[in-house]
Length: 136
Image 1 (tube, one colour):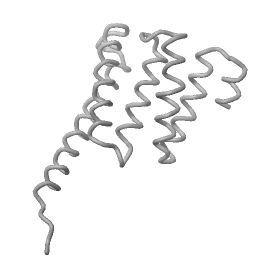
Image 2 (tube, helix red, strand yellow):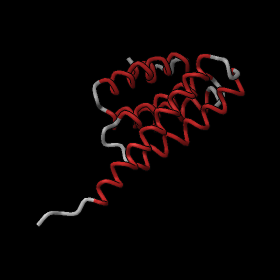
Image 3 (cartoon, helix red, strand yellow):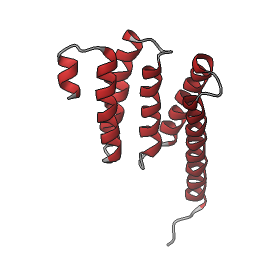
């Protein structure tokens, strides 16, 4: 459906909705690399150009990318840092555009907390690995 909408040069919001459904399915299926490629390389540039960075759909795409980065069991510390940077930026825009009491803003605050928690866990795991010594 997503490819058909893009090929037909549909309205940006239709493409975002179809791509959002596809990215959600990819994340649910554990196909994080494909979801990240779709979101980062195809959907986000299109949304930024056609809708602008303060459009709700554009911020939604960035949030989906953060979710894919955070939920990937193979996420590196750099992936999680990227997710944190994106989420901080989106949260600032959500607050400016929708206000601090909007449900989307509250969700962003929660997602940023989840990303930071994942970063803290990653740091603990890395610290434990560096303290562990190989047994002879």
